[in-house]
Image (cartoon, rainbow, N blue to C red; front, side, top):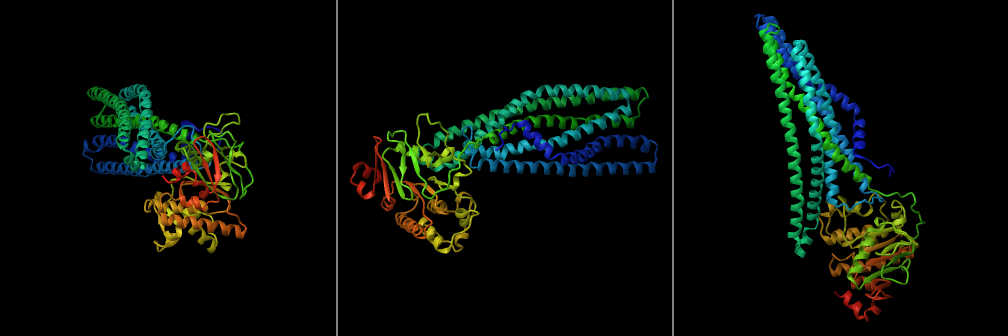
Length: 578
């Protein structure tokens, strides 16, 4: 990752530079639109003076042809200019979303502040759109300047006094509108932040709705979401109020310009210095001034929203970690896995290398801390040697996992949290990704060790069976078996699993336990090695199959033995029979 911290203004400038060619072309085409809109009333006035007033039929036809060409110019100019501006905006949205996805999925992604998945989704979907809209607004804004220039030139050509009045009043109106924008910027910033917060609350509420219902917390969660949504609504009202004031100011400015033009134009007609057709043209052009003027105001308003959204995107992209000092230990199938416990006075708890070990905790609080440590792995907060141990730490070959290069860590260690996360694709892709599929014998042993062999009996297309996003078309047990196969695939790594069979029935669990034993035995026979396997579980089936069971008791003592021998311990028996 780059050491420089991205900022909102830098993000906007980068997008504008990347789409500079499209913006220039869009401005040229949209300027044809604004110029055409300004020239329409001027051509109508000229038609009245030079054709209708004199009864010139040929002149009337020629002026009508010119008017038709003007309509064609403004129609095609807007159509293709808007297309270019929107295509540049959408391309930057795509690139920005891709950049965010690559960033948050990178192994070294470590948020500086706690971010819920819903907040990241909101930034990716909403704030990227708002940020990139600066491209479209830049195209419209510069073309609006061209429209204002055409209007001013025509008004001065038609009558000097009228033109000067417009040129004086318009900048004053723009200054007044500019004075209102700081409040809009603050309101928009609050609006984007509160929308993200409410979106995050909604996404995370839906992700855990079943759990909340089970523990009776759905009412409290709904209240939390209502409060977040109400804050977003209040921020939206504040932003709309500021926008309304600017709209009102825009109407006031354009009305003042039109009134001044009408009064001066009538005076000039009465004095014989302006024709009726020119007066109609002047009034039409003066009235059209509200369109480019409003576009310029909208551009300023949109930039404040884009800047607020870009700051949020930049803050997300700034999350990360400097891995320049991280270590790259040599990959080993018999790597030493150890855990530093806050309650232990006997040093780190070392897991026997190249063995199948199950870890059992007597205290639920310690078990929860271990589950967090074993899930986060490289995401743990880095700590110094002199810092007191307040939470469990995972070490590999005496190196704290958080000090190992996150991009290198998957070659050494695989951590499988309790919740199975699947992606849209085939079962094969969810297990092996882009990696090679092992030979048939190894594949069968792997599928048996994870229980996927029984799962495939229900799918005619086997490993090519499609999995929907997050595995929504599979049951919890089916998702868990696929996730178990994924962590077992690959070379002889050090693996850490959490309750890998909690969602399957007892028969399937027994088959998985036997499959794990056969899978490890085959790896030992072939000489490839099965690596170190640590499982955090209280399943009697897995405990019986393990080479060793480590029991962490409430007083901090550690007992290492087999499941059969530990069953004589009443505390252990109570824990594993819950």
